[in-house]
Length: 180
Image 1 (cartoon, rainbow, N blue to C red):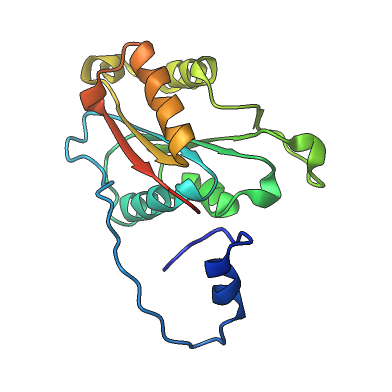
Image 2 (image 1 turned 135 degrees about the horizontal axis):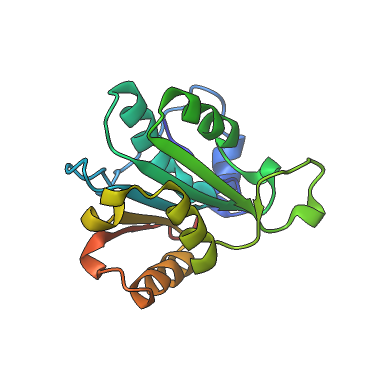
């Protein structure tokens, strides 16, 4: 499955106008964002918009294989109607007790939908509040592995935030979505 956000670029205009069942040649995937092996270490995912795609794959696989990893997903979008796979990610919590979604919206004033979740940007206070809520005694002993996927600026800002809060850079894995 390929997931893209349709923007008004030459490539995406051509893609949108192509007839169904057209043949295309796609290179990749090129990333290496996979879930770590040590299940005693929790995973914390930070995603913005279409940057959710690698995490969706990991979450579906973890649920299907009943992996023991504890996973906390922070997922930021402008509005619920802009959030790819939001309902699926919410439902997935019922299939995997080790997974929790923290979705946040940054432009609810422009939305036609009701929203009872978080509002605003993902920041250290939001992370800290939710991490403390799910932390078990061994959570901080093992230390989470952090994963970040999204636009380059967001990835850089989240990485800087984590490092500034004391997270070892070896415990941060990133995937930048350039030009989407």
